[in-house]
Image (tube, one colour):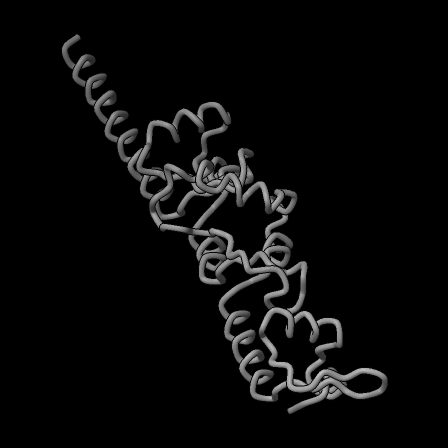
Length: 206
């Protein structure tokens, strides 16, 4: 067994957090102290808790840390996002449950405020494979926002993932955008070539 004072010295888990972990069933109480008598918990339960927490944090990121790294969507309220997730992304089926919030019970890891997390693999995918609509418009070369919206609407194969309703809160896959731009350019090239050939033919007939 291990006392709460030793728990703080060795692992940085203070008394208040340790008590929340005991209440949450993460640490097993062996002996409750008082009046100068130390409280003890099971050392095995401490090891199990630390291992579980380490594995969880290796695969998940706290939502505030995520939004800090994505300032364009940093002001979006997490509760609103959780409540609106299905409505926002009802037409998005490329990757089921993509960027869905993992909601832990209060005090699950002993910190009352830290209950909302994202999967790190989703965050990495968002960072590497997706682009928001503002950047996508610039890459497409379509100057007017309204024209880009029309262009996007004519391409239902490009699915939009939404954190909110602003352009900076909407993301599309880079590979889908590349394919659509290449197809669009090839189509324009063929059309321009056809027009050029028709002009040559008309001039030859004159």
